[in-house]
Length: 97
Image (tube, rainbow, N blue to C red):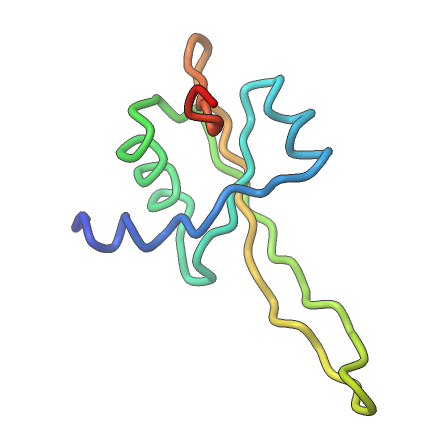
């Protein structure tokens, strides 16, 4: 697995109430590339945050149907991954702020 691909897998952390509650149980949510596999997601998290991953669950999120001006359209589909860490590991997104 090359390093460039691992850097492209994780797009951003998901910031929501559900993600915040899951973070208390050592489970973090990320927006990931649509073609990423569970193994790639796990290795990317381990590489970027220096933690050990216990498991990965992936959800395909369908885009909402919205109205853009006078036309109806659909937002883009995306993929979300819930990454569970082994006990004793955590990720700090605040960076000490």
